[in-house]
Image (cartoon, rainbow, N blue to C red; front, side, top):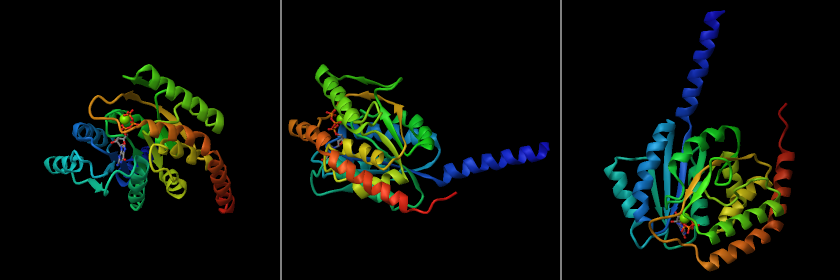
Amino acid sequence: MKIVFNDSWKHINNYILWSRVSMVIYVVIPTYNERENIVELLDRLTNVLKNIGSRYKIIVIDDNSPDGTADVVRVWAEKNMEKDIEVIVRKGKEGLGSAILLGLKKALEDSEAKYFVTMDADLSHRPEDLLLMIKRAEEADVVQGSRYVEGGKIIGWGLHRHLISKVANALIRIIYRTGIRDNTSNYRVYNRRAAEALIKYADAKSYEWAIESILIPLACGLRIVESPIVFINRTRGKSKLSLGDIIHWWIHIIGFKKRFNEIKKSCAEINSSKPKVS
Ligand SMILES: Nc1nc2c(ncn2[C@@H]2O[C@H](COP(=O)(O)OP(=O)(O)OP(=O)(O)O)[C@@H](O)[C@H]2O)c(=O)[nH]1
Ligand SMILES: [Mg+2]
């Protein structure tokens, strides 16, 4: 009996080890003029990813940053002999949403890609919070990095940013019944199902991405959990968020409702046409 027990444990351990090694975590990072932040981000991020122990790939989507961010990444990769990083440079500033979508599309081409992380390059999203987020990804389709659950917080925001964020989140919770405390941070982990849903339905070019990329998995009935993050307001480089972006963002929160219902219907139809596994 004892031998059988030990053997099963050996199998389980081997399986855990095998599944960790065989899965690939992709990290998609949009950048525009982030040369002051990107080196620290990549140092800390690769450190965390190595600790997790799975294979990983980092995709940086840079919009031909005038400050030479893409070159800084290339030099960093060479200096650190880091092969698992790719820089895609687009012609000009096309928006953070379309940059992330491109990165996800590219990542999905790898059949071994299991988790798809999206994060900002300005060090507002601490790479160290990814450890818990990846752990939680085993129980959900989307892990939302959350500033509004126990253990999460925001450092460095003025009163008006707190107010905008609180009101926006309350509005999203009411209109879409998300039940999620933090609907607007772009620090997330998606599994393949969720990433595919985003490729199929998302259309956001710019900052509306933060809204669509949580509401689409929700419309498709996917499971979303929150994991605490400490959000630190950028201390280096400039924000690209303009007043126009903020206005557009507010309009999108309300205007997306019709599309949300269409996506819900489409996803329900796809799910009901799939053969049931008993
Ligand atoms: N490729 C690409 N990246 C962008 C674009 N706009 C913003 N980004 C990146 O998207 C991330 C978030 O942009 P931020 O300017 O920090 O915007 P934010 O975090 O919403 O605003 P702040 O709170 O003011 O920092 C950063 O990594 C930016 O470099 C864009 O047009 N193209
Ligand atoms: Mg930022």
